[in-house]
Image 1 (cartoon, rainbow, N blue to C red):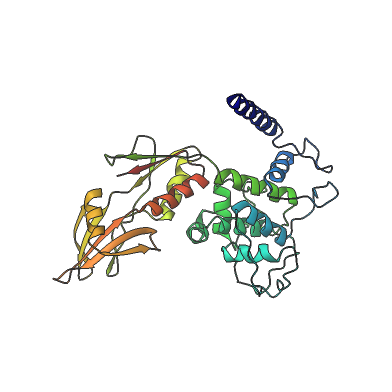
Image 2: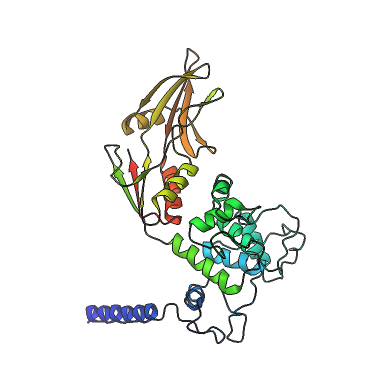
Length: 345
């Protein structure tokens, strides 16, 4: 009897899920026609709890999206726990009773907002440029945005080129035509819903990660180029920075594959010159890590290293990809729509 009840409950749950999936994308807002280009995005956003209506059963189709409302939606998208500090971070966000107070402070704490201006302007309409910037920053890609500035395909973007480039490459937002982005135009609520849903789908997209023991990249995939050489008196990391991962992923295209070299590499330097270089096995790396060598993560090259000064004055540096390094680079590939990442070891 107990087994029968469990089976019945499982069947009922499956039926509920089937009905829910069947209704996915359906909008219940009276002002959103079923055939509107954003109807499915609006419906799914509402079902996911990313964006709400304006009241009275209406979505607010055609109305502009405020900066406060978009900051709130980003908090929901990223699943951030809301915070309420005693004092706001902006001169116009000091009233903790306001519906947007905690969302703005939370978005600021997570780096989605910057302190470039003392004012946040919560009730102003968010521009297309601001929407791209806030979304990319929420995804944790603000550092990469600086390197992606030259990749911006739109001639009318002059301020946040890297952010727009990343948003465009991730498929979050398109231009108004092939050459123009119209960065200062106010974004509508339906446009915001479309961007939020695309970001959600990227964050939850599937990606395959395969380790190869022979260190060889499969045919047809794009190998991320490592940085090799010297810069001043400091050896440059022979590992691939996020910029290299971005370049490879863009070249591979949506659904493509990228190969990331993760073979540990030892450099011996003396007087600022590399005197010896050789690859290490995973076992050799683990042995060195257990010896208590100083561990460092290069923020510039986004890879990890361990190092020690030898008795003869030379310095031994071992560059490697930690699990966290690889995870961050795989996540970037996911956001860019890559299907498979090969980790070459």
